Length: 305
Image (tube, rainbow, N blue to C red):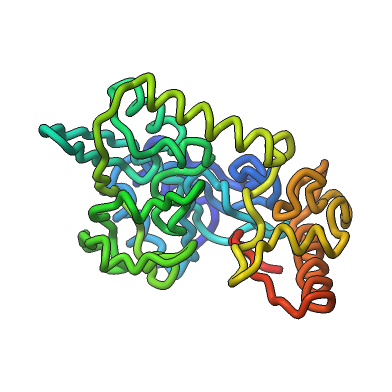
């Protein structure tokens, strides 16, 4: 099937937005990545089902992204279809003590945290500065300041590779540190239910401001990055040992180990995925050589190396 035919077929399925040869650098917080053959914004579960079915029947690779805040995309781009989830459902069920909030996978963490604050609903304050979506947060069990999304999640609806909708309990989602069942199985996250509590709006707002200030003071938010590059160590602080190895400010091309926080690799300008991958490898080798520790990256790489 030709590219033109595929483009027309995708337009029939997804009336919102279909773009050919879309630079993925526009859709990742790293501002890095070659072009995707087809980039589609899916605004409904039915569109996702049809797109998944079309890709499967025509043997076309399929990628699902949210806000692209934990992704490093290959300089060679992505062959196939990239679906950006635009599921933005927000449903709030209130009782005397608890609040159950159902959120579409495309809802941004920062946006919903502010909406909930205005309604006097607490629980998302620690996560309010994370620049990702609910779907991405569930997939990687995102966390900050001793709070993880698993602590709030009741259940998640997702689509399996047969197009069936299933709902997984908290336990069935197999949450671990920066991982879940969604990193192991090809389930597409659609929406999730969170259990939150009520609190005074002013108190929630103060907590959010506190955590956002901490983030600004400790993290290199002035430069494009994919958040924390490396996972927390087992019995050691990864950023601390990278710093002790003298790697702060070390760079390859446009990619640099942040001078502000050694756990971050930042794009100082025109960095390529190749720059970032080579820098990650250098950091891992240096840390192993100097300390004996093996460190593991938290960010996800997609595409050809």
